[in-house]
Length: 381
Ligand SMILES: NC(=O)c1ccc[n+]([C@@H]2O[C@H](COP(=O)([O-])OP(=O)(O)OC[C@H]3O[C@@H](n4cnc5c(N)ncnc54)[C@H](O)[C@@H]3O)[C@@H](O)[C@H]2O)c1
Image (cartoon, rainbow, N blue to C red; front, top):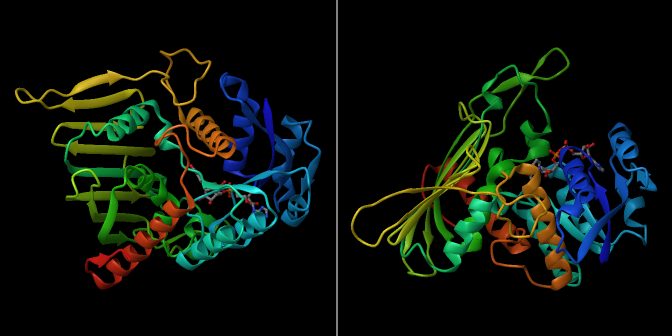
């Protein structure tokens, strides 16, 4: 089996998820390639302890990303750092000739994203993708197959939401994801937005324009030091876009919601596609349930299908067993390594976000900020 030697830069929440996925690669019996974690970097040395305890074979630990990038052993890097560092670190990784799995929003703003893509253009041999897990849920894979086979007919409407609610608690202390300097002007859009763009963009449903309504609901939070600090990031965003459907060439409403304050929702990603021949609904709130309605005249009947472990990349897990977030991480990493070694994705919806798709998301989010400021519809350039 081919091995790709990986380094992690930014070893927090998401770095640990990758390390854990790499450690259970044996779940994927058909993969011809596997990641081997050889180096970990975090500027906070305490974060490295978990890796030292759980991965005794890792030889290289550092608090300086330049040291990791100087290592000839490292072939690819997973970089999961705060948004203000994306441009600096992603371009350094690409210039060092390492393949890169980056994190969203893939640059804190449009100009940072453009700098990353320009660097990539100058280093075309480096394989670069951005993380996004939700298309790997079995129900979404099934929906992806329906999109590929044009089963929906003419698209009437698409609604894609990502809903959190822990920020409903005004006593929740500030962290970097709630500070403009680290998270960026996009606020919740930078944090959650790419997740709701991945499937529509991959389907070719390209937004032409946007009317955005953004809300800043909790304006200050405990600073963790006994005081309070202003919380200036957007909490909630609703984007109503006119998108074009490449199958029918018609425009349809595409609604993207990214809410950090959605009462009752812990971490809910959902998609609803309404078409003239079929419609589908899925939400991670009930991760087994796929709802499909096929219309051939006559009664309109929603089927409720219990999805099992029907994954894009074959897993040893029993086919009837339910699928969860850490399974989607494993599948996403399989997609990254598959495309890296095979030079093409396994299928249209079993693939990570491309740099061009991140660029489109930045044009959309930048237009959304303008739409909010002008209270008007803004074209996506
Ligand atoms: N794909 C997803 O589902 C998902 C989920 C959560 C976060 N994210 C994204 O992942 C990225 C990281 O988020 P997180 O939740 O893991 O954050 P985190 O705060 O848990 O981890 C970030 C880590 O980066 C380290 N760091 C900061 N500056 C550094 C530097 N110069 N060099 C090396 N390490 C440095 C921090 O010490 C921290 O340990 C963000 O882009 C975020 O949007 C993605």
